[in-house]
Length: 417
Image (cartoon, helix red, strand yellow):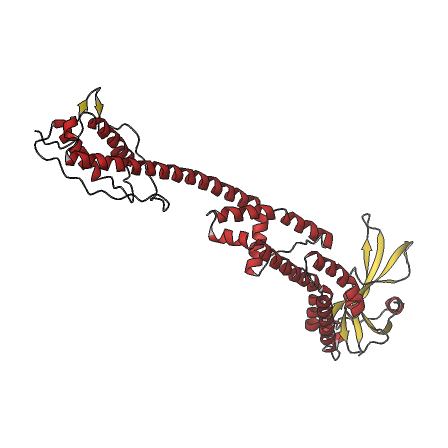
């Protein structure tokens, strides 16, 4: 008898037992639901005295059993080592003498190969399952990635809600009304179903932790985002009045139009409260009127305090020291300002400035002045800087003087000295 080291041989029609007949297979770990298979002990090499076919059959099975467990993880090349070699050994079994098939070693090899076929069938099922899962995971990840791209704007806003801070509002300089905010919100809400799809992908194992958190908590983060927007928009709309207070506190100066509004709390509430309340409603905020009224009342009080701090300021000494000249026409023009009484006026420079046109013809002449005026009921005087203008009438004659305090006149709070 020959001792067989390898069971690669040619027989019958010439099939090679260990030839590379099929590509190798890989598999995930065995499924918990897979039927339990009792491991067979590693088979011994063939005993002396058996025929050549029986010896090859036993030794071939011995070699396969050393590489192919009946439970646990399959080897990386199980498709070749276990599946194909097992099938080849089945074919070899047909060549074993019938008298030797009752041999104990031959029977153990035969039982092992039968169990191996069951195990290989399980491995095939697991490999197909793993391949199908890989395909499904790939499709899932592609869908999550596409949805993430489509919902980029909303995801950014959800991050703001999660983090409790926002860098931009839903309004712009040209579009500041509730209708515009609603349009922006509706545009973001259109992406909510897409984020829901991300959540479904996350439930199947897709997406990263941060993205899945946004999808899972999208409704809560969106509500927080709306609250942040309300605070941010309210703050921006009141920023102009905050600046007005700051200017009064630092310099004692205020624009007339802002002064007329901020000192009238009912007018301030009328101009800002209604519009801001509508924006708050769109953003899902409750009791916006109370929060608006409280902020406006504080603005009014802060401005009054800033103004009071300048009641003893001599603004003329701080700003109008160059106004050392006088002019009857200037005095006449300033005295004619309605609602204000003249306390003092001074002109900067000794002469009129003549403004000429393209053909060098006189168009108007100007004098620049500082005027201290008083409004009935106020505890202070107002110091204005202004120009007095006389239009050229032709023939060297000029018309009546008129006051031009600019497009947004402002004044300094001052004592009446």
